[in-house]
Amino acid sequence: MSETQQQLKTTSNVAGNSRARGLQEPKRPTILSYAADWANLITLMGLASGLLVIYFALQGQFQAAILALLWAVLFDWFDGPVARRMTGRTENQKLFGANMDSLVDVISSAVAPGVLLLAYGEFSPWFYPGFLAIAVAGVLRLAYFDVYGVDSDGTIAGLSIDFTPLVVAGVFLAETTLNHNTFAGVFYGVILVMACLHVAPFRMHKMEGIWVSIVTVYVVALTAVHSAILWVE
Image (cartoon, rainbow, N blue to C red; front, side, top):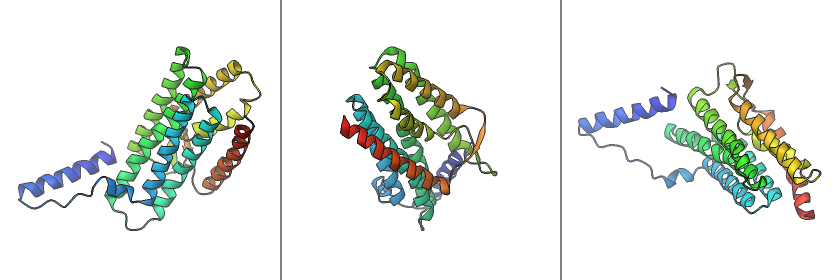
């Protein structure tokens, strides 16, 4: 049983014992009250960016989709550090934020790149396996992380899911130099490789600290480049 499941079971048992003794249960916060939290707001901004990726991809505006993809990742990298610096957060608030972060990551770092692949492949059925591969890999990778988390040595299993948007954004720099079909094949191959790496049986150190600055510089730099490409188009 995962730590999350154990906490939920404990909470349920406490509530059941309170009812049995005729005690009044503590008032639960409203769902929307969790949105009044800076870390959760950043996570939701990441969700908005991830949904923009899907919207732009369906419109065939691929450079705009890449810009949204980059910022979805950046929001994901910042919600954790912000949450850790906040004081007075209850255990339920922390648990809520962690669960919401995983749900948003599935959309922004797995489903959105998969939809982008489908759209770039003009929704050919041949591109569906690639979409399925990255979506399934994302769900498995995040579910595994939610159960086992970070080991005592600071390592995690498989490649972190947010690497896919970062790699896709970098690869898309070549989109203007290759013909459509050639780049579609390259893009497909990248997605399949990333899907395999997300669930591969190797361990890597969780990227924190200086990596936040590195990713920020990378996102800002690629934002400038892709914005210029979009402007020219």
